Length: 142
Image (cartoon, rainbow, N blue to C red; front, side, top):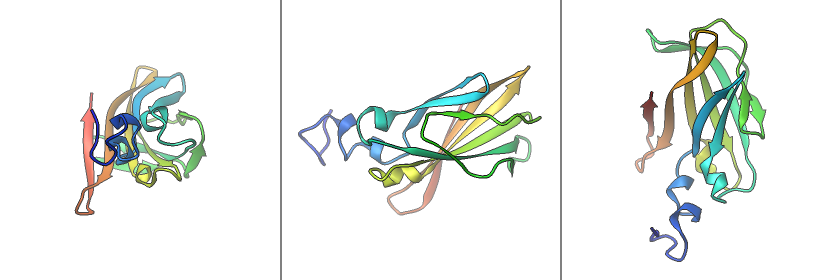
């Protein structure tokens, strides 16, 4: 598949790629006391380096409200420490800082639920900007 913006390249590696329009973090997985992910845009060569700015909050699934647990932290890696707290649900808000890709600064919210003594990913929400400039949220849950 090719794009009109860049007809000479494959869509996934093109600067006009749909991957340049959203924060392209995917494949969220809990490993021990960390959550890991893949930056699909970076894997496809759309950016050389990224910094991930993130915060953790306790999430109340009944009221849909969150309570901040951490100040903003930064990581150059794609594994983030999960805070050691007593909570049923947590939410990580992750923003990708890339000078090559300003649209990646929209947030991805990753929801975790405690099951026994382990955390599991139960939902992902992506913020993106519509053509009209309004903030929208796309949801995906398990």
